[in-house]
Amino acid sequence: MIRTAAAYLRVSTQGQANEDRQGLTVQLGEIERYAQRHGFALSATYQDTVSGTRARRDQLDHLLDEAPRYDAIIISSVDRLARRARIAYGLIDELADTGLEIHITDMGVYDADQEGSALMFGFKSVMAESDHRRLVKKLFNAKVAKVAGTPSRAGKPANPLMAYGWRDDMIDPTEAHWIRWMYRRVTQVGTQVMARELAEQGVRTRLGTVFTPTKIRRLIVNPLYRGVYEFGRKRGAIMARCDVEAIVSDELWAAANTALSERRGSVETRNPARLSLFPLTGHIRCGECGRAMNGIHSGRRQYGYYACGHTLQTKYNRTGQDCTHKRLYRADALHAQLQASLTIMQDDEAALLECVSRPTLPPPDLTLPLADLTRREDRLEAAYSAGAYTPVEFAQRRRDLQKQREALLATPLPVAPALPELTALQTQLREARTMPLEHLADALGLKVTVSPDGTV
Image (cartoon, rainbow, N blue to C red; front, side, top):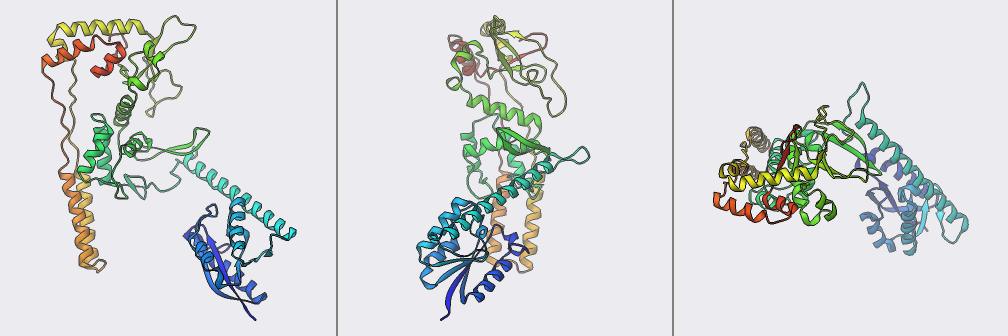
C-alpha cells in the first residue's frame, strides 16, 4: 500500500526561491527522490517564504491543520525547517504531536524516542544555527565595508535609500518638500501642533497613516536628512557612516534639533542640582558658531563655567572648521550680566523692543514638488491610454494626485508671530524677574548669545 506524504519547502526571500543550492526546485527534487525510494506518494506541497529565524509560518500552520490527510511529512534538510535550534525543536515537536512520520532527506526518519535520531537532529540544528550566524556576520561586515568605503572609493549606503523623502536612492520632490516644511516648522511650534497641521493638510506617511508626534521627532533627529547615512550599531557606537545627498542644510537641521531638544528639556525634566548651577542650560549660545554653550564644573575649580560645546568636542564638524571661541566664562558673572541687561530692558522701552525676536521666514519653494506631480499625472495618462487602468482606477488615482496638488498649493506661508503690545511685554518681564533664573529663562524664552569678547 502506497502511503501519502506532504512536502514542506522554505526559502528566506523570494529571490532565494530560484537559487541553485537551496531554491525551491532543488528542495522539491530532493524530496521527490526520497519519496520514490521510500515508497511515498507526494499528495501536496507546502512552501513558505520566511526567515528561518521566525517560528510562525502560514503554510506550515496550514499543513498542521491538514495533517490527518497524510501519513508523513518530508523536509529536505533541518535548516529548511529552521535556522535556530530552539525554533527547530519547537516546530519538530508540533509536527510530532500530529502523529505524522517526520522524514528529513539528509538524515532519514526523525524519532524523538531514538537516541541516535534525536542526537543527529540536535547536531544538525546547532550546525544550521552556527552557519546562519556566520553568514549573517559575513554579510554585515561586507555592508560595513561598503558604507565605510576606502581611501580610493567613497562609501555608499548598504541598501537603496527608501526612507520617507527617498525612493530607490532618489530624492522624492514632494516628500522632500514636506520634510523641509517640518524642519522649518519645528523651530516655531511643537510636534503636537505639527501633527495636527499635517493631518489637516492631507499629508500622510508613505503607508497612508498620519504623522504622529513620535514619527515627527524621529524624522527630525535622523542625520540622514542632513546627508549623513549611518549603518550598524554595536555597544552604542555607529559602525560606519557615509555621505549622501542632503534634503535639509546643516544649519536647518541643527536649528530644528536645538528647538526640539529645548522643548523636551523643560525645567521639570532637567537635573535640579545642575540646573541650579547652570540655569541658562538650553538658552545660551556661542556668538561665533551658534552652538549651545555647556556648563562645566569639577572639584578642582571653585566656580562653574560656561564654554562653547563645540570646543569641548574632539571631532570637527562636517565642514571641517572648528570653533575658535575657546574662553571659559564664570557662570555667576554671566548671570549677573544677564540680570543687568534685563534691568535695563525693564526701564527702557526701546531696549526691550529691540531684544524681542521676530524671525523672518522664507516661503517654501514648490517648484520641484509641483513639477513632480505633473510628471506623475502625465505617466498616469499614458498608462491609462495603454490600458493599464480601468476607468474607475484611473479616476481614483487622478483624484489622489489632484488632492496632493491642492494640499501643496494650500500650504500656508510661514508667518512670524505678531509682537505683543509693549505693556504686555513689560508685564511679562516684570513677573518673570520674580522667578529663579532657570524658570525665568523658560518663561521668557530667552536666547542668550555670548560673543568672543565676553559681551552678553
